[in-house]
Image (cartoon, chains in turn cyan, purple):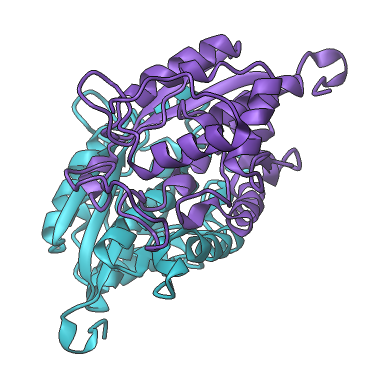
Amino acid sequence: MADDGGRGPRRAVVLLSGGVDSTTAMAVAAAEGFELYALTVDYGQRHRCELEAAGRVAGALGARRHLIVPLGLRSFGGSALTSDLEVPKDRTGDEGVPVTYVPARNTIFLSLALAWAEVLGARDIFIGANARDYSGYPDCRPGFLEAFERLANLATAAAASGSGGFRVRAPLIEMAKSDIIRTGLELGVDYGLTHSCYDPDPGGLACGRCDSCRFRLKGFREAGVEDPIPYAE
Amino acid sequence: MADDGGRGPRRAVVLLSGGVDSTTAMAVAAAEGFELYALTVDYGQRHRCELEAAGRVAGALGARRHLIVPLGLRSFGGSALTSDLEVPKDRTGDEGVPVTYVPARNTIFLSLALAWAEVLGARDIFIGANARDYSGYPDCRPGFLEAFERLANLATAAAASGSGGFRVRAPLIEMAKSDIIRTGLELGVDYGLTHSCYDPDPGGLACGRCDSCRFRLKGFREAGVEDPIPYAE
């Protein structure tokens, strides 16, 4: 499907955090026949197990390359994921944008994906953004992603020379978490490789109580499937 | 001018490379009364003297803070500024986008500035982008900057909560290099602190022959002022 005439498979850059959503988005890209270039940003997140999970997933899904790009976001502060602010537990979900919001994160991540895509000659950028069970983050909404796609087609030398046509692909954007999990399972994803918790214990076990764990557990429950990863409690 | 009622001076994030343009943009922001937060990205550029120049300029212009954010762009390749590709010399200027183009650089830089601005409560982001003597980079054009501003006002929690209103300020966008230099001199800028060369010698001396040196030298010549920095030849 993603074959480019005689020039071999088309390339896609996939933003891969190693969680359920980005892993599923990557599986969708793989199913469409893209040659996969996985991009993980090491932004000093406190949930470092993410980086290991991303490596496992990239390997399992046959990424041609997996880059982990270091980015010193900690110096900005302003988020529980990049500072010593406490990760909230057992939220009811209606308190607005939580402190785990990382300012402009998806803008930054998509910019980096765009840069690599331009170098690779890739035109498709996959992101596991999801506007439903999304914890209230503004940069997971369709309008934001469309605005980024417009920007991408103005920002690059490729676009300036007429060979643009960058597409921001968010195949999960309207799905419930349970649909995401069902989609991934149909595509053969092993969610035992993934990691979602914002605040794992020193051994890497998920807490089961942060927003990310709660959305994940609810998704598996609603999909009628057991979550294959262990939890601390 | 940039005073916010009784709440003290308004803050601006300034993208500062330590060259003529970003230094002048910062001087404009200072003249408007902003409290200055200078942001320099250490993206593995081969012209490392940039980082030192940025530090000198931030100090001279009274930045409240100067952050140097490390970002591993070298792993992407694709540019003479972040790889071992040779920096072209003595170009005539009509060969299209040169190999010194760093893919999506201004998109990445503006994303980082936006993230810091959101944390700081700043709404103005200054960038020394210039659409005239600009070496053919697509991400220095007004349409690109407008598209980024639209994106910024969709991307952030600040915007989502109604306290957005981010502005991308590119005060030099339509100026010739000579006008930029005249503007800076009127504002008291010491261009002896700045650094422009893409390919300085081991001692940090500017080559005088890369695009960046050539635009700089032409600008000083047309402004009728001597460039205060030394050159290798």
